Image (cartoon, rainbow, N blue to C red; front, side, top):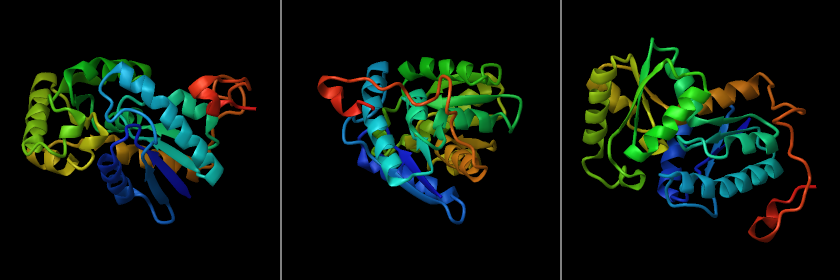
Length: 243
């Protein structure tokens, strides 16, 4: 099978990081390819960023459909465009926030989310409620590092570990969910330092998508997540016209 991992921002270094994390857990016979959209924000740290990331995500899903991709992973913790992508993809589409939260619920009574900037914590709480994880999500915390600084800040690992330690103490949680695809390679370090399971959404989503494809499960052909009705789109959206 082939899985397409879409980095909804336009940072090529982050796409490479995400691809490494995804390939590390893919099973035998699963091909993983990560892509950077041709349009969209450099990083996603606001509702505005999320909204403007969605067209690039949908363009990559459309390209994946033409290439015969079996399943998709959206590698941004806001899960931008997840519902729309599920409407236009033949195979399953898994967002990393949903996958990470559901995985963390297997590991104990409750988990903490540690994300990047404080302004993104509300979105994480909203998603926990949407995914039925509101009771298990005991707290959402920010480490204060902008997304694109996760690779360049020499103290990034130290700051993330410190924020996770604070979260565990404050929430009394059993696990930590790292709330950014740019943190994908930090799980082992944080877990070793703090002695708790640490969940990366990229890897959790890859394994979920792989399982769904292996079981032959696809999106519904009718109802809310059926393909969207044909209609014209104008201006910059003309390329998204269907039918």
